[in-house]
Image (cartoon, rainbow, N blue to C red; front, side, top):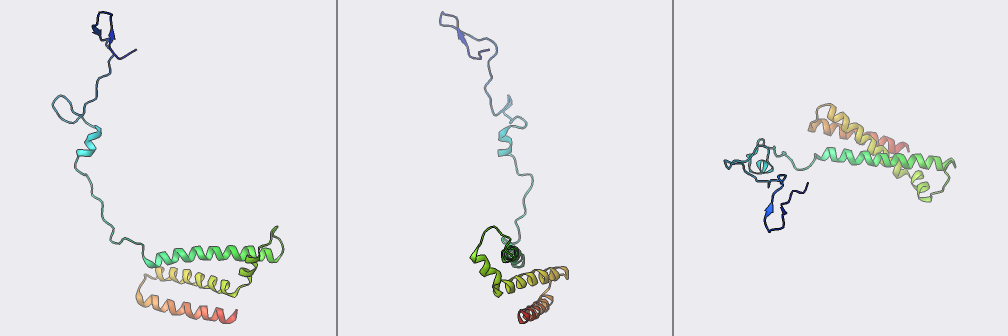
Length: 150
């Protein structure tokens, strides 16, 4: 099974007939064989990719992402704080107690929720500057009513 030539003792090497041929990147006519590794390098590109019209996501989508994560963390603070207030947690966190009783956290939670709600309504209505301004004013009024009642 040895693919290398062997010597018969008189200095002449014999071939056993099971040599591994050397790989070449062209066939007998000098053409690239089909499906060779170099075919993809030298071939013309078959399709072009469109360059995106903008390099960044729209500002509203980015703000919605951050507001969603912020609201999720506020929910965790409120849930753990309420459990800790009822003395059902096996551990005591003083920072959690301070955040749970803070009016700022509750007001920011309401602001994040109203932003997500009204930006979703804005997208459903078909987006537009006038609609955005009206929904912003509605959000400010709703947040003002919430702050006045807390």
